[in-house]
Image (cartoon, rainbow, N blue to C red; front, side, top):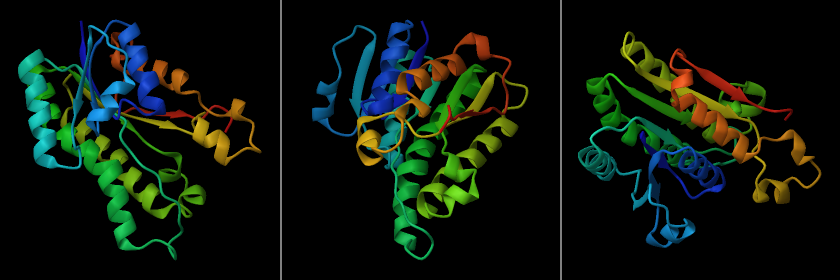
Length: 229
């Protein structure tokens, strides 16, 4: 049975991803931000939920080491924690960028760093980042400066890791969804047909594919999951 870590496991995407991996027989270690959020999950014999402040390097490292110590091998980590902010360059202060980097990059980097070393030692592992189309598309990114810049760092980090791990069975993948079909997005964009968006359950299936053995030949992978949005 593979052991995986899912950060931000109680969000709209996180809930779908956690369910998908439990249904497929994985052992899941999930992270949330508060003790109360543990109640968002139904009990499951293969699910362990921990409260971790992933913006803290020390706390993230301690969490990663404790999971390694308990489970011996972590096969994959799915880094779903993130946040969104709108604003063009005129409206975006440096502090706005720092907040987005903290949410979208620091939370991923702090967990990735210790787990990447662990995976290299085992010659096995999958690191999965959630990218964003505005980080790839200037026309969209120019109105979302802080968000797009923070997400763009994940693409570069994946490139660095993949180059460093060449010849080993350790990979970093960036999965890039367009708009997710969530209650919040339906409410904020009532005039858009949600059928063109990506359902969290569909994205969860793609994430499971990235982690399972069928994708073992993939390298330096960026998956654009846009549907018709």
